[in-house]
Length: 292
Image (tube, rainbow, N blue to C red; front, side):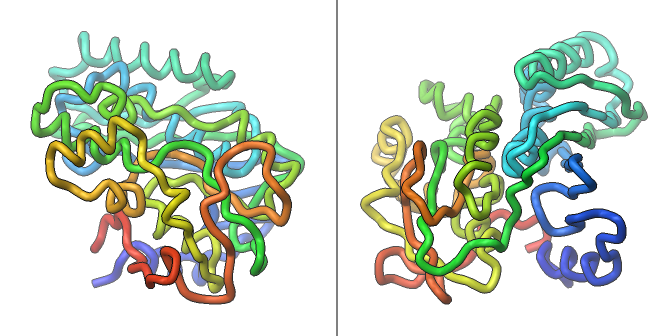
């Protein structure tokens, strides 16, 4: 049995970039000044049937635009392939399409194609194309550089748990899961000072390790402050807010490295030669993995 990283590593060896500047393994592939990314959403893996279709349409677009943001690019086009049960081709589909349109308008991009099919469960595959003349890639950081976070961590995972458990309140946490917003403006601005960048989709620690490659990181516990509503949720439910911050997924925050003082975001750590630490405590490198 192979985990997600092992499968990606095999694909990277079998399929070199060819004419592309960047191939498999970054947030997006790069060819000339265009970037290409794709994401898959599967019912009962990424979402449940109760997920409002309008917000599912928005999320389909926005998680792809988050990858575009992580490359420092401007969005251009979206393609969506959708496979759904026949009974969802009425109101559900209308609301899903409205959500897609809403997110495309927010992201200043256009839906230009895709495919439709029938299945017993909902499967959504989306591809986004963007443009930049200065893509910000992974694995370009150097020891001594600052690690910068743009956005909140842990809220989406708690929001999903609150929704699934039908816990009342905590609306901002629920919306963090239902309707993530890509950091497009910040990603574009980061091209001026970032040495590397990634969006946080599977959890802070695992995505930071993907960003740094063979290098390591020392995170500062006093800088990893949870949102107030997340802290309230954890206190009421006897859970660790730090666990959600370190290992919660689907936040779609930006994580970047820079040798300079960043004009925005929070400096949460330092790039080091090896190892992953919270202050002086070793960190387990884990996060969301479909195959683990």
